[in-house]
Length: 126
Image 1: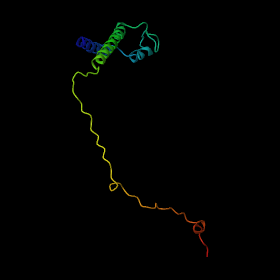
Image 2 (image 1 turned 90 degrees about the vertical axis):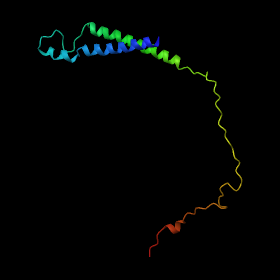
Image 3 (image 1 turned 45 degrees about the vertical axis):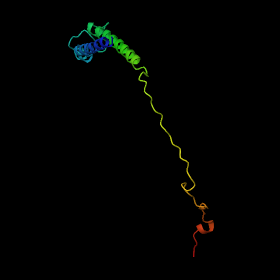
Image 4 (image 1 turned 180 degrees about the vertical axis):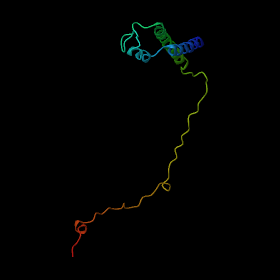
């Protein structure tokens, strides 16, 4: 079933590319409206669209539907599978007790920061 949807998906994608390449852009009619006697105006209405634009729209809808169905099939296949019956060993964490000799030793007295007194901070004039 998945292969059929995938083949339809690829064929629709190629058909969309082909139809888009066959169509004229809106800019191709603008130059003709400046004096070449075209029936369309510069930014006028195009009507309901021609056969190529309708076929492209239907192919885009079909492409979206096939993309959505492929996504649903992929989601069903990606379910968690625990059928292997493999025993996964748990990591062994060894906790060692540190002795007194292994710990870092700090000095008995922490250094004391002393700020200079305000009298020493003021410069003296001679």
